[in-house]
Image (cartoon, rainbow, N blue to C red; front, side, top):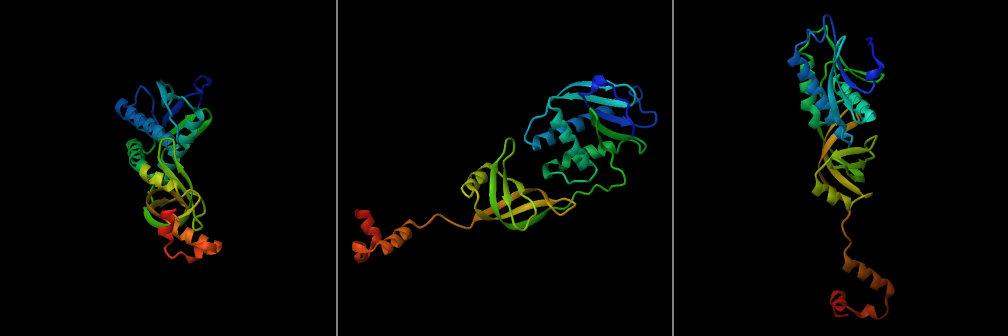
Length: 252
């Protein structure tokens, strides 16, 4: 696919629709703008998954093929988001559960165009295909897993999540959760817990996204009375003759 690109528009995030007789003056405005709206909305939602806000300013229609464009406030973030969107739309990577619907809706809008029409996004010299070709974009099924893992992080800028390292998985897991659960997990930071989660895996079998359904710690707060008894046993002396340690502690 070849694009003729002017230097004046290098800062634009462009949605490019190409095909026989595809020109702005012949395009269906409602179908075209609906596709653009779905794409730009999806881009912003994917950027939010990376923990940052992507804003778009302006709307431009360019000559040649039908090109709908806008200017992002962060080009690096926009490129990262457009890469993810391309992977989701083409079935290379499963989208997070909450992005399944907008990805499916955008893919459906692409399929509203004739098969001879291709859709892509570009920013500067970066181009990402958005027309699923020879790929049956199937969203992998979710599965429930039970793992023993170490809590390695809790929190998030825009989404509450927890990160775990498990010997049974090849990389650190990032699972969405709610604030109360995250607050409880914070007490187990760098400790092992047993977790139950609903997850999705990528084509390599690695957990790509998921939701923490529950967890339980392997250790609890120490029994303070038991600690005192052990200490008395080691120290000995006058404490050896005391039968009711708890009562004696209350007395002193």
